[in-house]
Amino acid sequence: MMPVWNQSTPPKDPNHVFNLHGPGKTGRDLWLSKNFAGSFTGDGNSEYVIDPGHPDAADYTINVLKHVAAHYDVDGIHMDLIRYMGTDWGYNPTSVDRFNQRYGRTGLPDPNDETWKAWRREQVNHLVEKAYANLLAVKPNLVVSAATIAWGNGPKTIDEYKASLTMNSALQDWNRWLETGAIDLAIPMNYFREYDPTQKQYYENWLAWEKDHQYKRRISAGVGLYLNSIPDGLTQIRKARQPSVSGNKLAGVHLYSYAVTNKDGVPNSEFYAALSEPSPYDNQTPVLAEQVAPPVLPWKAQPITGHLTGKVLYSNGTISDNETVTIRGPESRTVQTDGSGDYSAIDLKPGTYTITCGKISKTVSITAGKVTQANLTD
Image (tube, rainbow, N blue to C red; front, side):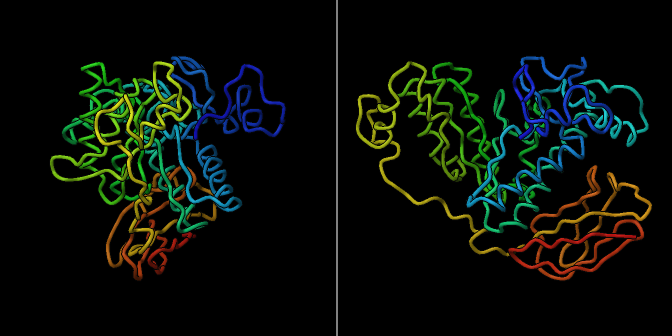
């Protein structure tokens, strides 16, 4: 999602986003993220990425997704790298200015400043939630998924999740996305080595968390085949398919990668065969012995909620950034506007609602399975 270029030579197309909003641009025209040291690349990152905290960059990303949904016959859209590159990232000047303006600060915030970390997570949340509402407005049955971070040891409690590398390095709160319904399917990248006792435990802990924390959506476990032997890859698939102690099961597994199915250079064809046929790599019933249909997503097949999205517009041109929008009707909710003045609310009960931002209000109707678009103007 965020990467736009990974070469030292710029793209030839003068209208490429890298040329229009990359190095050499200043002010609002610069969309790229920087690290704390002021570099566009570094810290092991060779890619140029646009910054989720820059409103124009976020809107550009959403418009690309909407274009794909509107013009191509796709059943789903998968969002990869929908996060920051690490704790040291997010120092686009426009992003920093927005943060400082909100909190009355100056200069560059420290990478580990908790308020700065929370603000950056919020920018990713806004992007994901707005993308979901806008995509469903184009194609209601579209399945929206995201590759999510599972770094380090898997959490056992919500406090451990909040302290995880997922939240504090990638600055990605995918637990919230499942709670609010901002994605249909999370695919955690559980890329661990089964032969390493520490990583094996990390893998099992993440699986346990995922099985019991799907909330109103679903999770399909990502398995890092490329790090494992064929027997260990099959073992990890089997673990992912087993129910948790509480009896909860995942929606399925996603295998990374089809191009490299094992660490030992064994032909991929042998792994593929071992999935569904007896093989020397596995002494149990093949892990995928039977063909099954994709899981039904009930909120898609028989929706009972609708969604709301819109923009707060002021006649004097002021952008409504981080203003509270109150939604009252069959249920009540408050959401914040993003850097473009947009707001979104996912999974509202059908009925009539009054939407208020400051002195502006509007009455709208929410219909199950539909996205209501409502701008608030003064």
